[in-house]
Image (tube, rainbow, N blue to C red; front, side):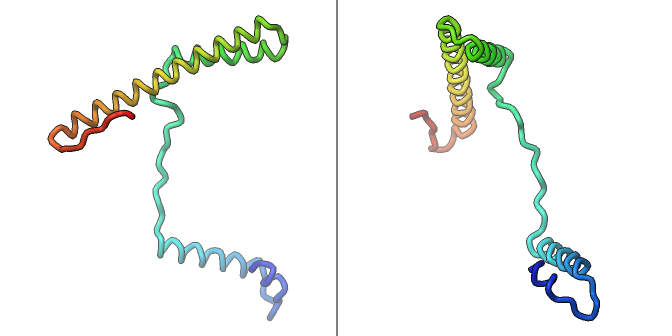
Length: 119
C-alpha cells in the first residue's frame, strides 16, 4: 500500500503525511473494534527452582566449560556425572510439583466426582 501511495502524487500532497494518517486511522479502527488486551506479567522463573538446583546447574556449566577446554577423559566423566545429577534433581522437583498440584486439586474438589491421578 505504501508503494502505491508513493507512486501517486496528486495535488502536491505529501505521501508520508498521508501514510501516517492512514496508519493512525487503521490503528484507531482496530482499537475501537477489538479493544486492547492488558499485558500480563509472566514469571521468568520456575517454581520448582531453588538454591540446590541452581548449584547443581552451575556445577554442570563449569564442568562443561572445563571439558571443552581440556578434552580429558576425567573432565568428560565429571561433566556426565554433573549432568546426571542435575537432570535427576530437576525430574524429582517436577514430580514433587505435580504430586503437590494433584493433592491440592483433589482436596479442593473433594465433593465432586472428579479425581485426578498421574499416568
